[in-house]
Amino acid sequence: MKVSSAKENILKKIRQALSQSTPIPFPQSEGHHSVFTPATQDPEIEFAEQFTKLQGKFIFCVDHRELADQLKALVVHSDLTKLYCREDQLKALLKEHAFDAFSPVELKDCDAAVTTCELLIARTGSIVMSAGQVSGRTVSVYAPIHICIAYTDQLVYDIRDGLVALKEKYQGQLPSLITFATGPSRTADIEKTLVVGVHGPKEVYLFLVDRH
Image (cartoon, rainbow, N blue to C red):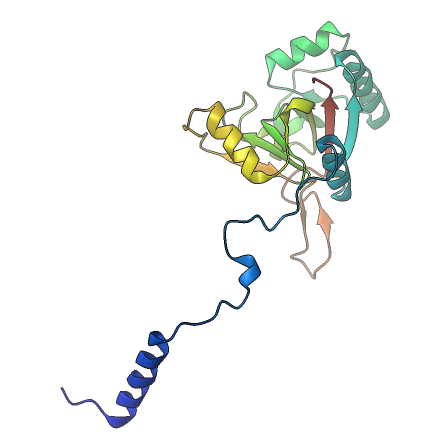
C-alpha cells in the first residue's frame, strides 16, 4: 500500500521520537524513596493535630473509666437521646464503667452512632474501618454523628503501614470494603461552597484510649 508523503513524514518523526530517550520531567518523584517526611513527633500528637485540622473532635482518655465519663459528658452536652451501637462487646465494656446510654433505636433514627475502628493513620488524621468489623459498612456513614473509640496501639504513621497491618491481621484475605474516613463528610461541588455532612456524618468524634 502506497503511503502519502505527509503521512510518511509523520511516521518518520514518531520513529525518531521513540528512538530517543525522554528525560524524566520530575526526577525527584521517581524511585522507591518515600515522598513523605518521616514522623517527627509522637503518633498520638500527629494524629490529633491532623484530625482536628479536618474539623474532627479529638478526646484523649487515660483509661476506660475516663472514656465512659467523657462519653457521658458528650451525651449530656449534645442532648444525644438516641445513641446507636451494634457492637455488643463495646457496649458491655462501657456498661462496666457505668455508661449505659444506648437505646433500642434503628440506625436511620439515631442521633449518633458509636463504633470501634481498625486503625488510625497519624499522618493524615484518618480513621480506618472495614467490612470485617461488627459494625459493618453503614454505621459510620449513615449516622448524623459518628463517635469512634480507638486505642493508642492502633496508631500507625502512614497509609502504607495501615495496609500492611490489615494484611497481617486478615492473613492476606482483606475485607471487601476498607474505608479511610478523614474528618466529617464535606463537599464543595455546589458553587464551590464547602458544605459539611452531605454524604456522611456532619460531626466525627474520636476518643483515643491509652493502651500502651
